Image (cartoon, rainbow, N blue to C red; front, side):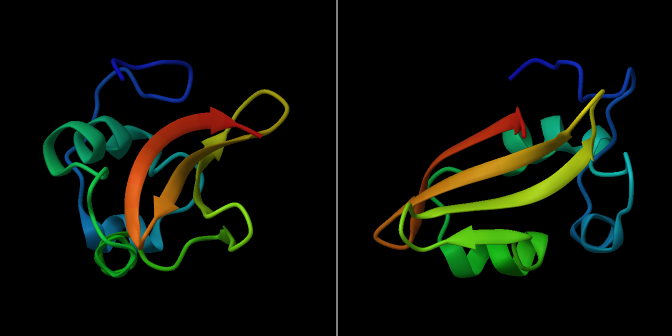
Length: 96
């Protein structure tokens, strides 16, 4: 992921503490560093919960979790993680 409508012009380093208390656009600036430097795919669900805090939504039937990032024009951008056997098999940013 090289950027997009949900990113700021100047990305910020990921901080677990700042992510957990972030509001509004605060998480958007950290998403590139989170995905590229920290990494999400392959991590356990417990590991990501410690890193990001509890997911804002979790669907056991589809094995999806998501965390809110920032508002878009009409929706909100989310980080969506798909799980298999307790590990993240994909992580993508999309609008709702």
